[in-house]
Length: 171
Image (cartoon, rainbow, N blue to C red; front, side, top):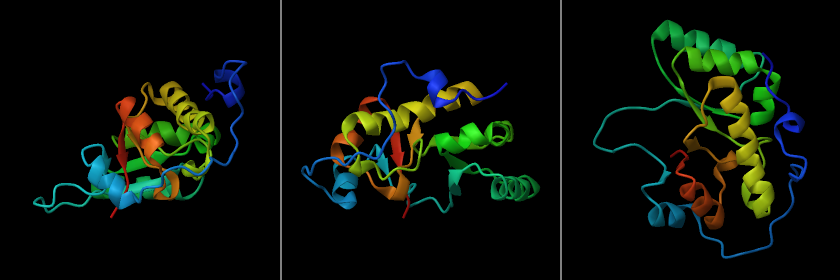
């Protein structure tokens, strides 16, 4: 079974994915956004717990993802893979392997766009396309999103929260 291409899963009226600049709006720093939306914009786990969470961005690919999965399996370690939709279309078997081996899957946009540079429709399309591809490949849409480069603006954050998403960055 092949992953649907973006042309196959989009309605004919859906706009094309492109990195269209977003007009300047009230810009908050990521630290300010984290303080304001701390329960939905996650930078780290509970500080009282002495644990480390492994995550990998820009997955999958044809070389390193398999090597990482082999090591994780050998060491009995689980991780989170933030999936780029366009890459999932190229390597659907690797996305399925990530899921089958018990790892968490998150959305990392369709084309690894710098999200704050996108207008609202183009931004939402980046998330929606990847959601649709992952729904097809693994049977669900992820509830966690990691914005490429860690960049997200407040309107985008509010939209993601409205869709019951957790935004997971790093520290």
